[in-house]
Length: 181
Image (cartoon, rainbow, N blue to C red; front, side):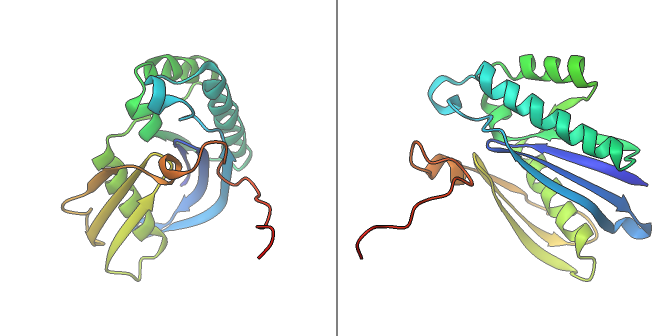
């Protein structure tokens, strides 16, 4: 079965389209990244801005189009740190459902750690035990354990890479080399 997983994070909208093979192994068909900066301003206001929601919706629409073009039978959306922390996350969820017909599921930090762990090991089934570290834009998750299940004690930690990035520097933004020496 071909599936699409869309991860709406603090900075990016990620879309992975994959075939689920016997035993649960994933065979990647497409892996896309779009910068939406959904979390812009959430730390200061506790709310998602209209502009950030528009960018996230654009990223979700493009991801849904990719999934449809590649024949995904199922599309799931998981929203993470910025959506968890925003008081108006339900407004974005309503827009996503009304506009795109997708269920916008906000994951807890523990769910995010568990799903990241399981998804990672589904890509590398020869690995029997692992620790998976996911440094996102707004949070960091850690999960470790065996391939037979999920991490027994997934952990979510506040603070991702985006929270420690200087103002005005956007993820993926090119930087000029330092002058002088």
